[in-house]
Image (cartoon, rainbow, N blue to C red; front, side, top):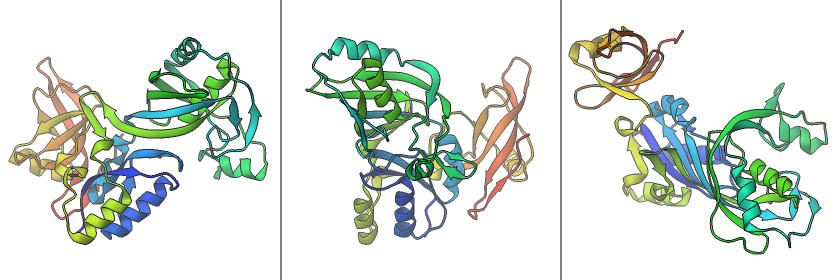
Length: 318
C-alpha cells in the first residue's frame, strides 16, 4: 500500500538529494516522492521526504529554517568552497585567534545578499552554474537574499579547523559562508564537513535523531518492521501556520472549493490555514481571503483539498 506522509531520512555522504528520492521511490514502490531542501553530495543529515499526497505539502516545508553543524578548515581555499574542490590557494593560519574568528562570524548575522558559489545547481537559461564552471565557461555572478540567525563557534579551534553551528534561512550556502569567513580573516578557508540537524522553527523542529538511513529503511521495509518515529502520516504533519476545525457542512463546502467562515482563527489576510475535520484528519490547505470585524472570524478559501480516495484537487490562488 502506498504511503501518504513525511519520512525522516538521514542522508549519507556521497549521494545527492535526488539520489535519495530515487532510492525511497524504489523502496516504497510509489511514484509521488519529493524532498524538502537540497543537501550537497558531501553533506549528511536530515532530509525530509514527502510521500504520496503529502508531496503537495513540500512547498510549505521547503522554506523552513535549517540548522547545521559543521567544520571550517582554514588556510586552504577551493573552487567549490568545500573539500571536493580544486585547491586555489594555501596560506598560513598560525596567527588566527578564536576572538578574531568569533568577531568575523558575528558579522554574518542578519539578512544580506549572499553570492552563490560558481559550483551550484542554480540555472541560467537552462544551464546549471556548475556545468558552466566545469567547462571553463565564464560563470555569471548571482546572489540571493539569506538570513543568518546563528553562526557560532563550537569548542576551540583545533590547529586549522573550527567547528560551528549555523541556523539560517532556506537556500543559504554554508560553503559560501565558510569561504567568505576565510576571506574576512585573510587566510582563506573551505567547508570540510556539514551535517543538517534540524529543520523548522522553535517549538516545531524536525530533528535528525528521528531519521533513518537508506540502508535502515531498506531493512525495515524488507522485514515489515515499523518505521516508528521516522514517519509521520499526513494527518500528523505539523505545518507552520494556523489550524481550523471544520464542521460537517464546512467540510462539504471545502471539498467543493467553497469558502468557509472560521471564528477565532487569528490568521491575517493571505495567511495559509490548515483545515482539519472533527477527527483531526487533514482536509485541505486554505488561505484567508478576508477577516470580519474584530472578533477574528476569517473567510478561508480552500486551495489544496485532500479527498479520501487519495486524490488531490488544487484551486488557484489569485
